[in-house]
Length: 254
Image (cartoon, rainbow, N blue to C red; front, side):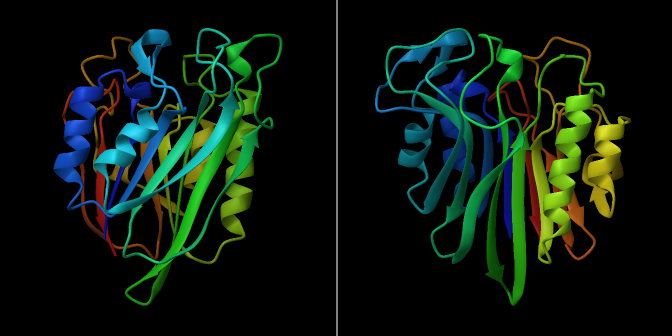
């Protein structure tokens, strides 16, 4: 099976993004997307993001079932909006895969508002899907980690976020994959908590960066795929395509 994880930057580069998704739609069984907006209204919102990029992706991935998990309602990153708008996570899984469960849990605050108009307090959730393939049960989970402060170093909230994720995963018996935009540097305590009992493919494959040319700050790590020991890696790579300020991570596994 093949999985792709990507922070889509709110669809800022929508033409390139949708073309990439279409090109890979036949070979990818599961897409995990972060920084996704959903709305009944199609508009350009803050930082040239798109209010219904989720719907645009749905139109491309006709052979996949989409699941959206909101964590914020009623605003983009810059302001409160006067039309229906949700932001969050999305999983798209091929139609012929029988989904057992697809849900989300909050790992930082609770949805769906910020405190005192401070976007640093945007709630964070973990979305997950479980299914059986080739007589093996898998749990795929992903999240978009706390992004303030932008240094991607440890904070009390980031450590607590990791502890909540680890506590949830430790209760699950499936073969596990945890992926997404963690907003963490590799050598943090927050990453060490998540790595316990898991393989960090970014470290194993000595990936030098998961950010595209559109990201100009120094911290070149944010995105990861961690797998439990009962997941077999057939192929793993980071795809160097300019479809976001992040790069897509592609994993073929069994």
